[in-house]
Length: 222
Image 1 (cartoon, rainbow, N blue to C red):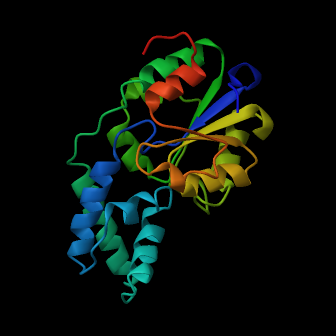
Image 2: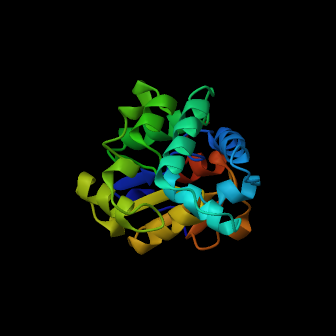
């Protein structure tokens, strides 16, 4: 897949693990609240479910661990405690993201953020001067079916008024890659959280943000 930056109208970014370096914090907070419920999780357990809504993740993990499913009230309690812990974490942007977003905006491309996280989480991790660069922000609260369903990316295309064939998705997790592919959008995957073997359904796998910057903004120093 050669660089197609001159033939697209929009770039759609996943948030966690792509725009913000938040996945280690997500893992440690999930690990803590699930331990309180008698569930032990690995980093891979959390990273491969990235993109799922939190509620679906809880139920999926309990099923995977062959543990009795919590009722709705208990799930909400788990989610509430997880949100509180996560909001005590300091989350940083990946250093190259500002350069990439500014570069794409200067070329007149439309930008969207498409995340399985809540609006509350987006407000916590994304500075105002970064969130304002996105022409659309799609969260778990804006769709009925989260990733891996195509609805989040289809919703973003509609918000931007662009076609799938002239758009590009940046992801880092299998659920998001599947969502983008089902929406008919080419996808670049970054190895920020999972090894390449998990990401091979993407159209292109890049090792890091430096490679992404070189691909999207050739000639720009990062």
